[in-house]
Length: 47
Image (tube, rainbow, N blue to C red; front, side, top):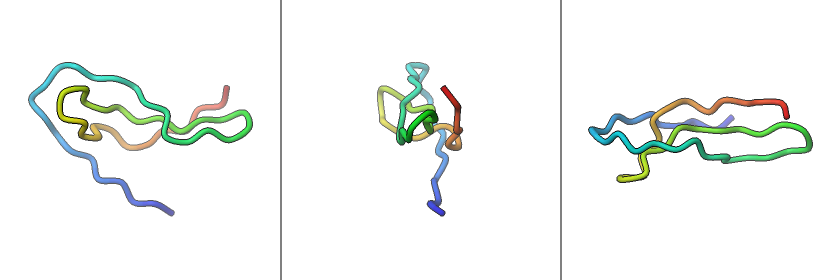
């Protein structure tokens, strides 16, 4: 299992980024557009 480091930043520009896509599911994280820090734990969604 991968370990992810959740960070904090002062910026407000955020984007949901797909980090893994397999068949009918994708793993996403919230990323700061200004400093590229990961702001949330990965979340798996079925599509």
